[in-house]
Length: 226
Image (cartoon, rainbow, N blue to C red; front, side, top):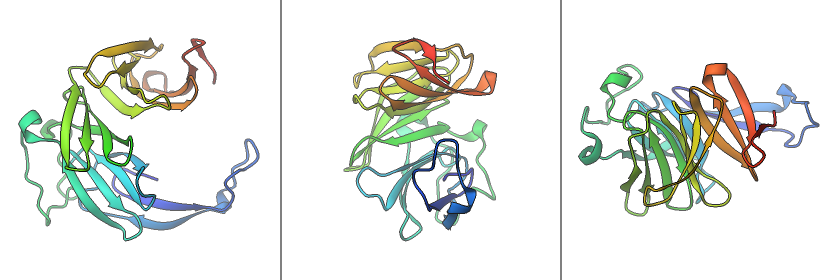
């Protein structure tokens, strides 16, 4: 579980509750992990390579953080490259971004999502540039795939291996090729589609911020499922 400034590991007693039944007494916090760079956390995903590691995106340090869950430490900090997005502050070991938060106007990218695709690749989206790119953990390099979208959120890969993200102000799900070519769009009824996540087959969960709703959309049937 990711919060704005920390993450927690939960132990769930029963994994398959009856529909509509969630027993809070069967959920307990195993541990809480903290770090001075845990400021403006947006996403948390388990690593594809090792379940004892997690991939965290945090906007204040403009970074992707690889977290060793077993030892409760940050094992790697990947900042988005200054050659592409400019420089603001040099991150040092004694810098606490919770006490001295780097706010949106002083961030270089406002990274808002970091999604592990496979053992080495992480898809990343930024708000300021409206960019989508990919980190390669084998050499820590970063490749920008596209940019220029006004409000780019939630870059991920679906079960078919397609890269997609939320074009927030257009209220659309965008599917993009590795070379930056737009493959297709799906328009929702949102004026601020804050996030989108593939659930199964043609169903996606959409955070429709302007309506204050979580919608499950079937994009093949073009209908709201729930």
